[in-house]
Image 1: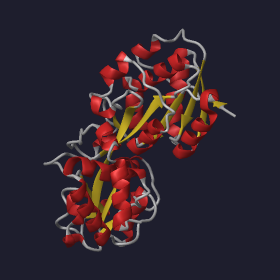
Image 2: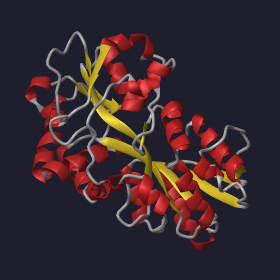
Image 3: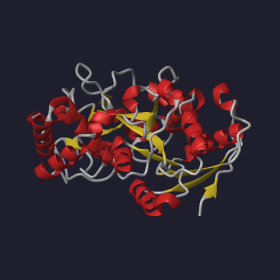
Length: 338
């Protein structure tokens, strides 16, 4: 059963507030599982009068559910994390193309699906962490992670992880399949242990001494700056970090995004909500509430994110990266990346 959000929160930007006379409902299927997102929903309800109903779950399960429901699906919007999942939704035929001058103007083109079936609203940089004492010459690029000098030192997640799938797809995009295969083979050789756990577990591997170098998303580490993260915050001074490939393509960015469901019964409200997610107030909340980088330029960063420093992001078109996801998975399988 769909559940309605009820938490009250502050006002929206003037642009969103003009929709205050709107009425009706909005049904959101979301695989984002952050308590801080409650304010995003409640602010929209307060500003528009639209009641949000929400189902949360695993992205693949939600996509399968929308497929099974077909034309009878109550879903208006799918919200999920990473280009790979948004691409799976598009390929499954559960999203639709939309026209929105607001989204076209606000969301950078490289964070939009080429057919306007999904849009990115927040970002996380995939960066390199290392032991301050144990590593004097850390890898400066993603390709450097495959350097034999780092044999037995690298902790990184499994090939099933969507963040790694998109990272490898981006390497295919920038450097070609052959170079990407060499990279994946080299990283497997350099692994300190078989892939296990999430991004925070890779950083904890540095703390425990299991590895000296780790790959993870920025917002996990930023979270340990903003609040207590067990096994990480108290040892944070042991860990240094860098944004890879600054003299090349830039740091790879994962995104969180959403699109309008193919059979959305409340399409107009769905588009209004996506437009709201691109507003300054919502963008700032992605940063302050969940330690993410805004998708819209010019929006201020939360202190936890600003503390990581300035960097050059990779602005490759993620629709192009998405086309290389099948090749990335094949490479993972071929080289034995567990």
